[in-house]
Image (cartoon, rainbow, N blue to C red):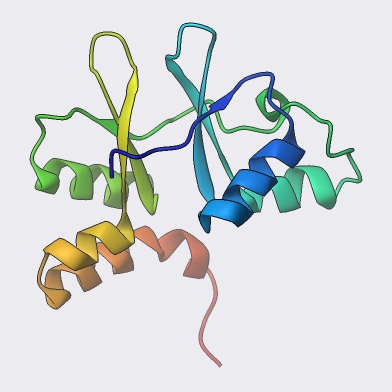
Length: 140
């Protein structure tokens, strides 16, 4: 998807939450003053790092974003590269960036993968990504 909404480092968590609500999304790339990718913020980040800890909604996204181990791919990469990186990083979304300038060009989500690939392949990618959520938990 190339119609990506982005946040700037000094945007507030409240602005992030409003964009997520209005656009019905749960993930936003965060860019610096030069519009280069510096992090991502998710609805889960807002819940676990802001709401649960009692921080104000005026908190800057730069204080709660994930800025390490960002999973990206380039616009010329094959979808299989994006899928592999999503699975390896156990991420359900990957940011597509210009590999030189790190400008955000798009986002690929697991739901995008499931729309373009056969169900079995999409299921395998989902299984690899969700291992982090079920690790150590046995079904009852």
